[in-house]
Length: 61
Length: 459
Image (cartoon, rainbow over all chains, first blue to last red; front, side, top):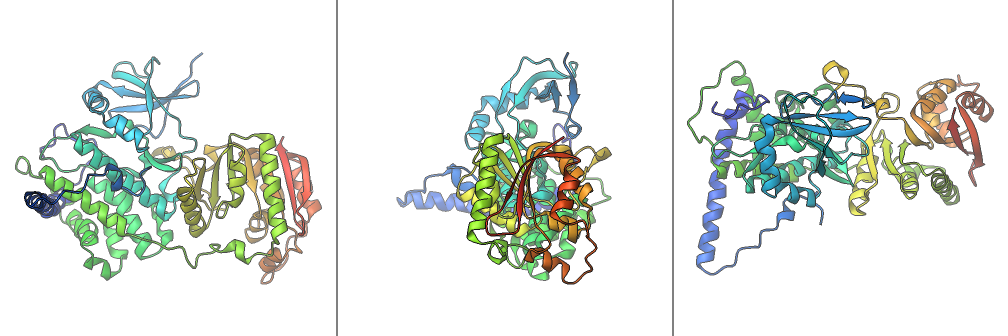
């Protein structure tokens, strides 16, 4: 592992490997979403304002 | 003279630890954590999280450190009125704690920090909201590194939530057995096959469990530098968030979810009881109240109206869920609904049995309410009345307790299929047992019922 410094909890070999694999796939989605955003922007579609508080039901108003 | 005591649950993370001095809670930050702490404070992340109610506020203190060799700073965090544990939470409480953790991670990443642990025990309900209480959970994010807390998040939050949603809500009690969260192979084995058709559950639970098994005895070879891009990590967090958000549980068919609709209470008896609880709480002004057998929290709210922080315990996950939803809807800040079986309350757990406090060790409190609960303990669970008196006296100063006589239809129901082996279960027998531990200050017959409400003070 190349964690620096090493974490105080064992992240687990299996959890570590599968996380990288799943995240590679999911990262593609994030990248596609970002490029779709710039395509829309190019054609003059305004992006939705980023709402910090909308990322959790639990967050206070 | 100062009396320094390190908290027994605070030993895992070398970044620092909690201690008390003369009853005041402090957190020592060690030098090894100084850079991460500086980033948390200077980047504005601390202010943002505290403002959003996601992180416990603290002030830097002049208090001397408990272990001066390693010390960098001492902070004084705001004290949480009552520490609760995930095996005492209802479905939505655990779900909100999970979403709060992910929300914190997303906000942290925007300011180049990341959570280095995702323990459910780091979340507490403060002013009605799931709040991170471990100020030292953050580290400076290094581009390319995976999320070290991924395994812990899946075990502490995702696995129990999925089991509660897809199998049985009572499986939250697995958290009482497994102190570091539900093992993923266990969750994967218990879940119905249909969960494999859900991308989030397939990957984060089933495939994840398989990978853990496959690599359990293998030493990890260093992956190439930058194995996981920032975008990939954001994708992972968002996927966990979407998976958790889609999990639902609707209270139905559990024991007492509709209790108040199925009792022999008349409206006037119910209102009279509410009025007495309200009056007596206002008179005694307790700071902390435990409502033992609080159901959906109707009487807890009467006690809380006096300004007391009220913990509303009930055995029924549906009642606690309903109570928590009310807390959220009404934005109530001083009521905490929790699941508790009074006949088998939360024990002391973890390393040396000192990491998680037992129910009793988190008391005693100024006032306890025991309304419509005595017959369940004395008759259903066969606890002799003198033992009940000692139990309550050990946990509170003031006790508001309701005696429900044998002639009451609720007690009759409990006795229909069993022998009546309770000759002393009478109002006189109850008073005789309780006066050995309590001074009875008031006793009022509840209007339009055969029940009596008492206000007692422990001796």
